[in-house]
Length: 108
Image 1 (cartoon, rainbow, N blue to C red):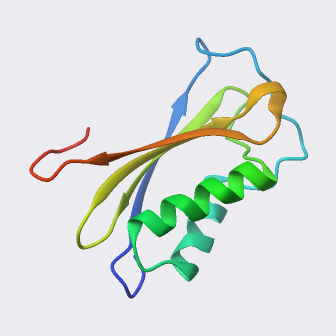
Image 2 (image 1 turned 180 degrees about the vertical axis):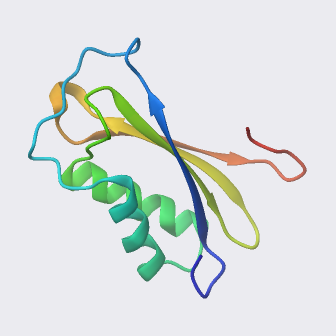
């Protein structure tokens, strides 16, 4: 968590049954690196989502295995989001999505 209250929780997800795409070694960002950059730059969860998404789109994402991705809870004092990312088509870039958790709800 940074000084503005932006914080993360992360877990690895297996997508073996969902895709036949293979990552390559040109992808630059793992989730932890993208989260570190977002913590340095951002004051809100929305900024963190945009920053991480832009980084993995531009420089690529790599996971723990050829068929894994990451699910990241992104919070600030006002909002909570779930950000999911995996290697993009043909092992390049990234495929990611984010969903805001409505007030009064939880995500599991």
